[in-house]
Picture 1: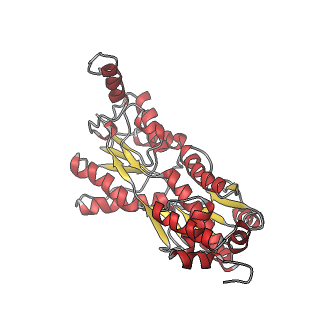
Picture 2: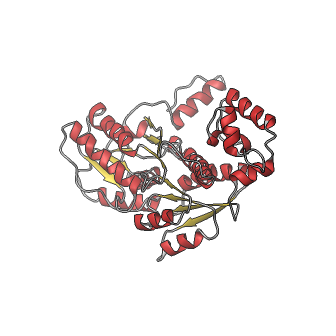
Picture 3: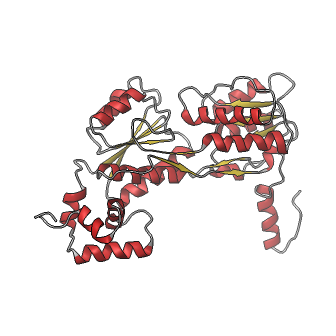
Length: 357
């Protein structure tokens, strides 16, 4: 035991848990089993482990600030990630610095400058930050966590299984519905998530022994980009059997153009998205998509970064969060999970058992 009193390591050893667990209990964040939490609290009390000792053992921060770097800040996806990240920062009594690198000509310099104002950074895939810069920051000892990209140089990462989930989605279109001519929408260059989704899209074709599709329609990731892609797709016939969009916002843009041109979805063309943002389930037709735990991406990344700042070794280096295929009407399924289902439920509640339509 230190002459200045018990340390974090002393408490962890006494309680028979990891220092990460003691850290979470002491900060009051994260999920810890009730029995384990009680054991840690008892060890803290028995060893007279006080906040001042906790501060000396854990806190080497100069700024009380966490940084997070995004490729952009527009749309509900980023707002959900930020929400999850910010909640964990608040629990840890830390402020948050946010940098969106979109259209910034010297984004790397901005990120390096951010390290002078934050105690550690989460860097999201596709943020115009190359591997060399990330490795350079790691060598300098900057606490780092990668989000929506794979680990690099022993830097921990949190992501979802984009490849496996997109294989499942594409297999559903190819095998369950029998579609054969599929188009992928989204720019895969510099966007790790979109690149992995394209990889899963191709792999599903291989597994189904279906001819590989043409190159992706390389557009951005907002509704306007989806509308631009739709104008290309619907500019000539025959239309594809299905359009697989790299995110939900692209699918919304495609759907808006299809509606304006009286092209029936899914009667003439099936449509899918990725993310399951709130509007996906209430648009008409309701959108078949992959649900990913967007808010959890932010919260898990924040907890990992707090551990890195405290010097806690994170194992495993890569955390992969689960996803779920959500079948709705835009792919041709009768899911009972959309506006029509909501209307039917309302009618029943009001005592009017009326079939929608």
